[in-house]
Length: 204
Image (cartoon, rainbow, N blue to C red; front, side, top):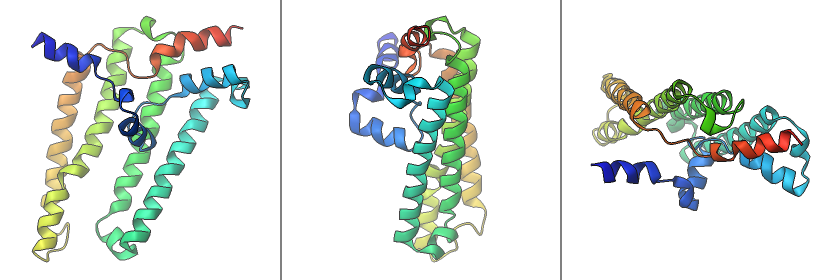
C-alpha cells in the first residue's frame, strides 16, 4: 500500500507533454505563472517587469480565451440548437469559473512565500478548493451515459431530472473523495517548486 501511495505522489502529468498541454489549456492543470516569470526574466521578456499577479492574470486570460475558442468551435460543429439543448455552454462556463477560482487559490496560497514554507493548513485549503472544482466538472462526465440513453430512446436530455440527480451524486461523492485526498496527500502542486527562484528574481 505504501508503494502505491508513493507512486501516486511521485506521478506528474507534466511528464506527459500532450496530456499536460490539453489539461493546461482546459484550465484543469495548475497555472504556470512562476515558470513564465522565470523564463521571461531569463530572456529579458516584457512580463519580467511586471509583478507576479499580473503574470497570473495574463496567463489566465490566455487560457480562458482558448476555452472560449473551443466552445465556439463546438457550437459551430454541433449547431446552435443542439448546443443549447444539451446545455454545453453550462459546461464551458463551469470550466472557466473553476479554472479562475483555481488560479486565484493557487496565487493566494503560494505567492507570498516559497512552497516548502507554506503551512499544512494552507496546502489543505488549496487542495480542497482545487479538488472541489474538479468534482464540479466530473459531474458533467457522469451524465454523458444518461444523455446518450435519452437520445437513443428519443427522449429530451433533461426532462425527467435523472441526469441532474446523477450529476449531484457524482459531484458530491468526488468532492468528498477530494477532501480526503487533500488531507492524505502532502506533495506540493505543480509549478510551486520554482517559487523560491521567483523570490530570488524579485529581490534582484
